[in-house]
Amino acid sequence: MPETSDQRALAVSLSAFDDESLARLLSERHVSASATWRDMFDAADALLDPASIARALPLLDRAEAEALVAATADGIPATGGIRDALHTRGLVGDDGRAYAAVAAVVRDAMPDGLAPTPTEPAPRASDDAAAAESAFTSAAALADVLLLTLDSPLGRIGSGSLGASERRRLVEAGATPTPEEADLLVGLGARTGLLGSTGRAWLVTAAGRTWLRLPTLERWATTARALRDALPRAYRTPAGGWMPQPTWAGATPFDPAGPERAARWTHRLRAWGLLDAHGAVPAWGRGLAEGGDVDTSALRDLLPPEVDKVYLQNDLTAIAPGPLAPHLDVRLRGMAARESRAQASSYRFSAATIGASITAGETADSLREFLSGISLTGLPQPLAYVIERTSAEHGRVRVTADTASGLTTVRTDDQTLRRAMEVDTSLRSVALSRSGDELITHVAADVVFWALTDARYPAVAVDEDGRPRTVERARMATTETLDSPDDVYAPLIARLRAGGEDSDAAWLERELDQAVRARALVDVTVRLPDGSARVFRLEATGLGGGRLRGRDRAADVERTLPLSHIDSVSPAS
Image (cartoon, rainbow, N blue to C red; front, side, top):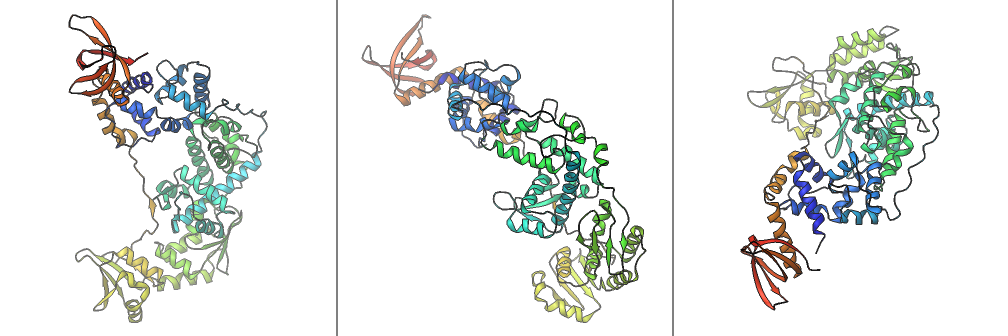
């Protein structure tokens, strides 16, 4: 028979857990919410399965793992908060001793015990200058990644990482120097809430869009806090900071992927200037490392100062004499293509880039006002001419949604344009058809507008009163509201609790059922009518109708015993 005492002890413990703790345990063990368990004894039986126990061990931090190994190898019960943590994970009993099934899995996983804790190197001064350069470079590169993602979502492959073509796109656009850095920055953005996933693609979140317009130091500080808070539990200190970086690789001793995860997180914090190349924390990161807030004053002194002016030149370029303030850079890149990125970046205007900015909601007046406001050289005549000519041509095709008919109407005074749109095969997907001097379709107005824009028609979206309106193309990541473990497991937990109202009777019936299945020889203690007790040694043969049937080998007879009179059952010794 299986180790029934452990099963019963765990079942009793599970019954005492609150719903939140029980749901968290089921979630950590990857239990299906549709499990057919009837009561807490079924749950205990499944949770003591070696495969289930093996799923729990990689989640343990160093102190918890050491306590569990001590309880297994040396019989030393876990105590205090660590005992509570192991108990709520279903690994030790109320007394802090490991369940037998748990001890067996631990011995198989760590036959020679835990590897020693890595020795921490002597404290050393951090390389603040190199860390500051890394922080500045990564903040600018992450902004480039987000801007490119706003233009076109980043595709994901089945494993969840970037596809090769997307890595190449980021490298060719100058956002990252290598494909590996592309993976790093996308992972960093995802961990800090700047990027969200649809499953097939990465999209910028609302928080990411707001982040793009923050000053560089605010960008850095916001992400630094989020990175610290996203660190795995095993790396964190009780004060809320993080443990010395050299200890991370051994922080989850039962997890084979622990060193790889530690290297990944080390790379992220180094890229963001929170660790230097040797794992030391620079001055501005010490508050976060100790569980407090970030102090950017020391970092500010090492970053190149931002500028808010550019040189506009007659060759339709703009030169920023230093790092351009982020909110200006984002808007300028909406009307010009950036040609080089450095502390002095260059941008190039064209009819296409000006047209794209007007499509996105700019006007000739807003373009002139913005560019004149940031220019150290005024507004050059060639650039003013491109703005005037492009804005004059733009909007010759007007796209309107007719709410009454549900149709989208495309109007233009240029008959040549109208005929071209009517026969253009690239517009076949929006199914434009002639109606008098207009083109109509059942396709949504925004879809028609972007189809015309992509086909390079000078389209503008207008409301029913003829006023231009801005059409937002960028897809944003929605905030996913994932069901909490409490919600996912609520029906299962309710069924388990309902099945355990009479735990003694349920456990007795379970033991008898196992004995019958194994045709085991058991000692059954029966309470007689006169109040005395008698032990029968039976080979259990059947259970049903509230009675146990078995062969009494000593008397060589079949006996039938009412379950209501059975006090206990145990394996025959």
